[in-house]
Length: 530
Image (cartoon, rainbow, N blue to C red; front, side, top):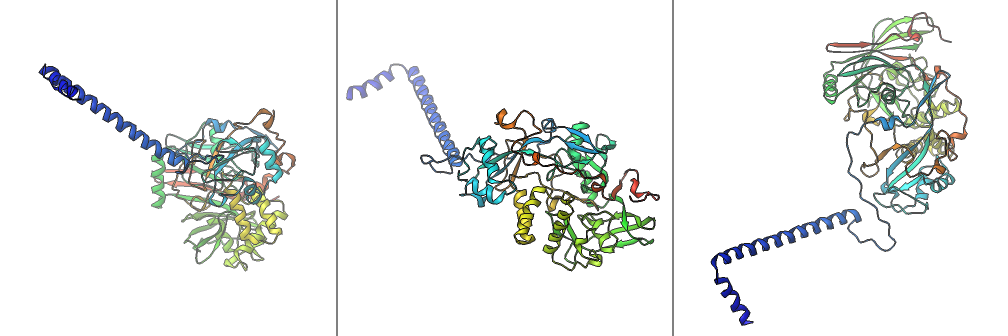
């Protein structure tokens, strides 16, 4: 031991230069070793963090199922050609129709589902289809958990599970009138929207929407909504081409620099003088899409002026100052002159006076119940802005006497789950027929794709297709599906008259610009109702 210790200094003393170089080399080696150790240690720590996030901080037990962490959400994904190519249109009997197509709906596991089996969730919260259907869908590989086809509905759900269901999607027809472009430049696109056409994907509508028609037929995408129109309302619709223009128009809306003018046909002889209605408007149900005059509602103001009277009905010009949901329709109902063919505010479900003067005479729950039952009797549920499958569930609950509160809850559950993800807008994004609406997200082209995620309980809208499905499970003809109940039903096509409400956005005006459309036939003085 001593000889070894003595030999080291003697060797070091033989050459000073060598000693210096040797010392530098040793120090550098030590530093490299230290750096490598630090790197390995940091990588190990990062690995532990990743494993902690991925596995919930616990080692998986034998047989325990691993659930990957939610993926980071991507913002600003637009509808593109891959979405537009999902299916195609055809025209029949004056209607625009969509060929049925396969489509993926998905959602992350909600808190109340944790610990339940897929069978329990499907049988209690998605009753628009039978348990037998879901069992067949499993065999066909259409139900996936974390992108892996499941082979047993008795699998227990865990937090962050991503559920996906491939369905055969049928869209309702709309009127076959062309979507006319009034103005197209570098800043805006202005169209004359036909009645019955939703602005953006919602409920059962996806391709039969203004956004998809503009993308599929006009090559226009990545548009930003400035305002929206109700599905049954026709007329001027303005889109911004860029975010900068959208924000500029938003500011004009806030500053009350933009004006909209509508024309409608109402029941009875409307007063000749200018009439102003300033009754506050309260939303009864966002999901069903019903409002009424109520002191607890939001301040609203609409200016009306009669244009003509044919002995039975009047044509009225409407200038909304505020922009509440259904503002024009609600104010006309309050005044006692509902729009001639308004399926909601002209309905007898409101009572003998149809809420004239704000007198309803029933609770909100009773009102919603009456509206649904009236349209069910008339086979016109499609005129309510609710998916048919949700109304089917509501009907089942109504038969059990559970009341409208339960019906609306059932509707909301279905809308938030696998049965239908692209819902009608919520209260912050409701379409309007009476003014301007500010939205936190102005782009109407937002959609999530297969790499995105959202918070617990929020939906992820997947692109259409049949990923992971075999040709035998899909079948040779995408318009037919042996598992689809809708394929076995023959539905009566709605008439054009049923799809058109006599309310039209005639003019949109702002600083330095004004866009207008022609007067619809039903608004002309010599028009006579069939």
